[in-house]
Image (cartoon, rainbow, N blue to C red; front, side, top):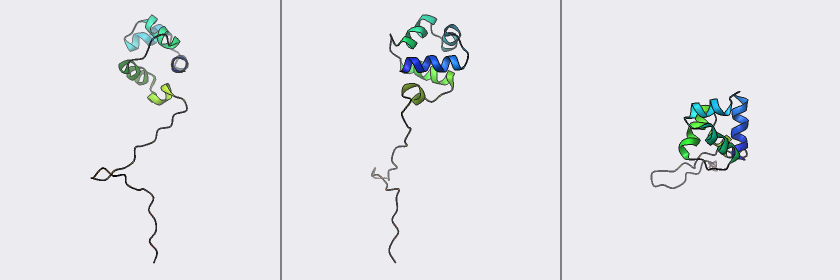
Length: 89
C-alpha cells in the first residue's frame, strides 16, 4: 500500500530511513512508522515526501489512479461539451 510504495521509492533513490527522515525533518522512527503504516500521513508530510522523491502524489497514494482534468465550465458554471458535432449542410 502507501507505506510499501514510500519504501520502494525511497530505496530507489538509495536513501536510508535516517537520511530520508533528516531531509523531511522528521525522526527516523516516524519514517519507519509511516512505511509500516502504523501511523497516518499528514498532508504536510505527504507534500514533503512527494517533493523530496520528485513524484506526483497519485504515484504514492494509488498506483492505479489516473489523473483526469476536471471538466471545462462556461461562465455560468455549466459543463462545456468538448465533443462538437458537425453541422449538416
